[in-house]
Amino acid sequence: MKQLRMIGAFSVLIGLWGWLASSGIFQAAQAETAKYPETIKTEFQYAAKVACSLLLPHQDGTLVRGTYRTIVNIHNPTNKPITIAAKVALATAFGSEPGPFDVTPFKKAKLQPDGVTELSCFNIAGFFCPIDGVCVDFAFLEGFVVIKSPVPLDVVSVYTARSTEGEVETMDVEAVQPRKIREMIKLVAPAAQPKIKEHITYPPKGSPAYGDKAYGDKRCPKQMCGGIAGLPCPEGKKCVDDPSDDCDPAQGGADCGGICVSRPKQMCGGIAGLPCPEGKKCVDDPSDDCDPAQGGADCSGICVGHPAK
Image (cartoon, rainbow, N blue to C red; front, side, top):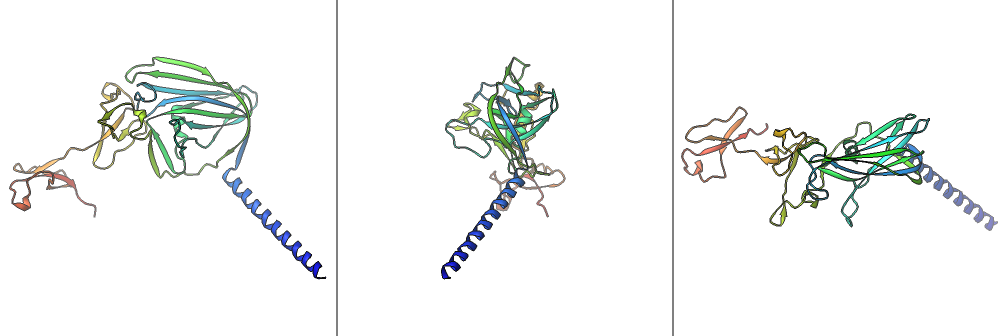
């Protein structure tokens, strides 16, 4: 009798364990479905090389100085509508540690029968904004666009390049060959209103991608601004043309990237009694040797904004 009771209790424990396990599996499956609400069954993969100059021309680091553009055209040769997926894999220094933005999540596109879509440099950069609330602002980028499809496609890349002040100088057209790779692609649910918490610049300042511009043994710590992305400067600085590149807005250069420089001091007071503009006040200039608190007469000052109340 005692043995029967033990067997019964053991059976209850096994049943309870099975229920808990199945419940956990069900919850995990629900979480997986919520994160990846859509999947695409694919059989073909295309990897198209991309080289893009965005905020700046390339700077003799990875590629020779100049402006590079890539556009990838994708054609559905079938008589049925299809859904494809694409991601971007960023080229990084050989041997470097993997980063959070090296490979983007997949995005999908629908193609009607005989339909064509394209990925330009600006579309490609858009894959990196936002990722987990962070947008990557590219001076220039290199890597691959990886396209997944359920059917064979026509994928053609077009590459153009020019000097920063000239018209197109080179053009190359390359048909991208497929690989037979079967894979179920999971698509992340897009946020209704994605929040952007931070912008970062890539390549990072001081990277060898900027070439050999250096002061002594340190690379120029330039803070980029303007350009296609319209990057702002921090308070107290303004955006000016970067004299070290070949893009000159005065000569018709479009979307030239700039550098942030300190705004010149606006002098006031002194013997001439120079006034400050409305909204600013005149204070002693701490960088000179004339201190009115120590008896300095007719000291000139600088205009500063009134502190916020």
